[in-house]
Length: 69
Image (cartoon, rainbow, N blue to C red):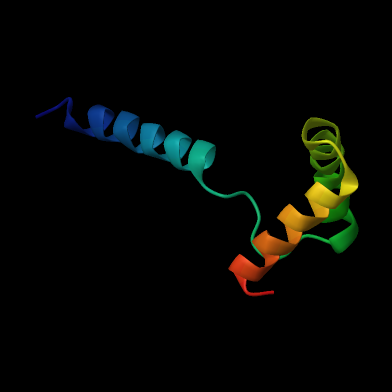
C-alpha cells in the first residue's frame, strides 16, 4: 500500500506525456498564405509527375467538387 502513490504519480506523468505528444497543438484556422505556401511544393510535384498544368487543374477541381467547394 505504501508504494501506491508513487506508481500513480508515474502513471499520471506517462499520460501527460502521451497527451502532449499526440494531441493537436493548435485549434482554429491557419492563415490562407500559410496554407498556400504549404500546398505549392506539392502542386509543383504534381505538375512534374503528371505532365502538365491541365492535369493538375483537373484533379484539383474534381477534389474541390468532392469536398463541396
